[in-house]
Image (cartoon, rainbow, N blue to C red; front, side, top):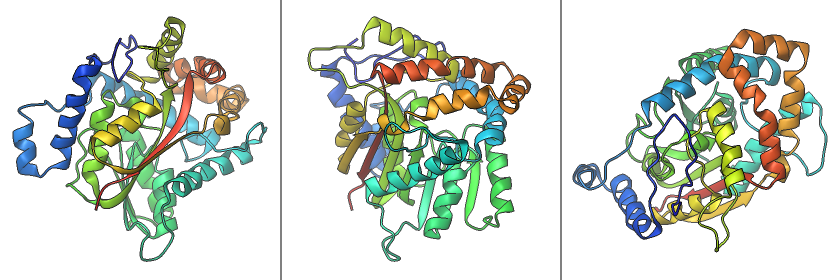
Length: 342
């Protein structure tokens, strides 16, 4: 299992493992494909094949969020991601919604995104936008144009409806698109934002490479994502019991192979991205999953689950495994930020 991405037995996507001696040239070629001009990319594509997201995986993700997004919104609102809390705190539902906004602000602060009228981002892409909570927040905060992409038609339609209701039709737009083949030209966005979508990507190197491709020179890239723990120098892979736990989560949430925050850093380095930083925010999201479980067992949550469908119910049943993974220091909630060279 000597590879950058440590594979789990997901039925949704085949994962090709690369030994370390093959990994370095592979990442180098990924950088060449995505960072060079279009004419060079066409030539390089004969050397390294670009991998769009596996169709079975895409279908599973889309259907999962088509089913579950309404349940989430009815209980938690329009931000479909963890909240950021002080360590060792308990919180009410209103506190959780505040913590979700704080997560956005903490990510922006960690990445050093400027509020200065001249330096602030003017064009933003939200990769894995959900129902557009981050997109609308960022568009309002910076007065920016924001485009969101998701695999879920239900999410894209709901995001656009919410934007219209808030009078933001001229600021934000949403469409169904693959994060590994984004429908944008090179160098379009000042801020590239991915809040908890990286865990769905079957090829993490292609994912980061595509984020870098659509980033403008000097743009900030922010990735907030689920990871597994970093491996020690003596380890080639996770332990069998760790792999077994992640397998169960993968099968419920339509996740391919996970990677570590260190793996993301290595990918960013291979793409010659700058100002690469990472942090483990696992302690700061600790209250989140217990709160989600409690909300699922309220009358509103329970009846919404029953109406939503089997995929959502299956996801609810494995929520305790997320808590178990965090407690065992297997699952890490990581932020990785970097900047595309000028």
